[in-house]
Image 1: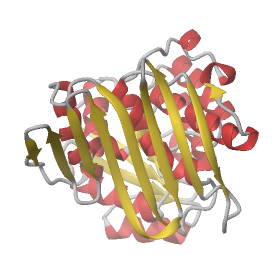
Image 2 (image 1 turned 30 degrees about the horizontal axis):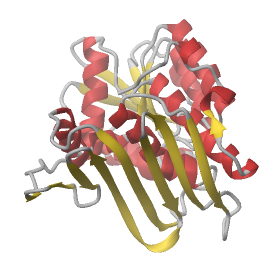
Image 3 (image 1 turned 180 degrees about the vertical axis):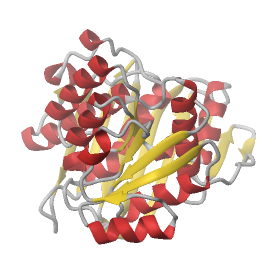
Length: 329
């Protein structure tokens, strides 16, 4: 495929960023912008010289000139829009969370498999250069075998988020990264959390048991005044610290501390380059819809654990192995 023609669905804060970055990439062209607010779609299309805009994404489903779409709409609409586009023969990048609940996610997986199309899920932190460097160091055995992960995402409530709570919006990043680092799905989850000032949960602490003495603790809230995004991976021979906002990595060993050079590039650009390249070459993207299903399943286990006040085993929710999902990485 010489050039990938894309449409961006959703022209809000994040959708506008998609249009901006895609308009700068070689090998692709943004040919349409869609938003339920037609004036907003027009403003974004005009700003980035996109030739077409609409307020109905279904107009674009049957357009054979469009190869792929990115979906940047509210989370509750992700499943329906993604399924409609894969059924129409388009590849899709859908922002996280892939769906608003586990039932929708399972439906999406069935529809994607039957369509034969490619779906990528927008876990942008996988493309943060600090995380990329940290994973490279982990794979090189710099801290031995990883056994403990602590992820912390705290800060004020992002007012544009209103359709999901802090688990699906914020903690889900570290849920996905924990599976990515350990390369397998946790056995069980125990979580404590609730709602202090929001209608949905706004704080959570959860422990994911990966077996073999490996675990991940994930803390997230919308209550603290300052935004922090950090992860610590403890191994048998050292500790790796990742600071996502500053894009920094620190390696701590018995003989000292080392801060490697991290390439400073925009994670969204790296993510969209990966998607466009996958569509152009016909390669499977990563993370894909199965990674999205795993993260939704674990997020549901977190929420059920909060409600029930007990440990929730992943196999209680869905037979991931029966779907061919044993390890992810």
